[in-house]
Length: 220
Image 1 (cartoon, rainbow, N blue to C red):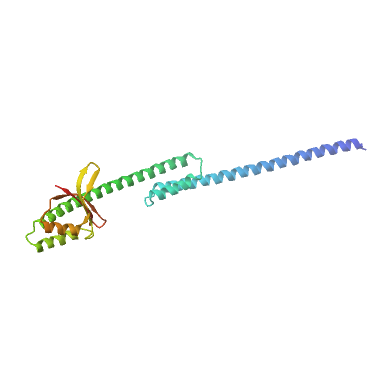
Image 2: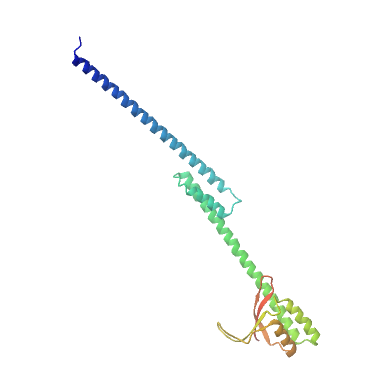
């Protein structure tokens, strides 16, 4: 018969083996779980990268969206903070493209603004010459009827018969002294009655409809 000591020894060894097996199994399970989690994480990251690349490539050929709209879409990708060389490269390309588009639009805007200013100068110059001629004709009109017809034409050039007329008495640099303010209708009748126009047009201000809203005159 086996002694109690031998039986106990045998049981202790069996328990030890079982414990090793259980620990090994537990460690194996933990390792498998960690691998699965790492694999799932890698899959999700790969999908994020692929989606970002797809979106960034689409932005590069987007000719419909405005620069602000493109920037908004690009920022939506940037905020994800994806650490990928290809993604970072595409972000840089898109940002450069957006900046260039903005610069081009700004250049075109400035050109259009300059063109508009030049056209306004031409209109003002033409108006200036025409108005000056009318004023001379009113002063030298042979009859009151002729003068009145000319006054009617001049008033059509102004935003209102009460549009301001400022007559400069003296001018030294930025210091300007004006005579008592009047309006265009009153001044035209004055030129007609006095048969005198000894001024020249110093400046015109026009409203959005191209009508004169302010006239400045100075002695010739």
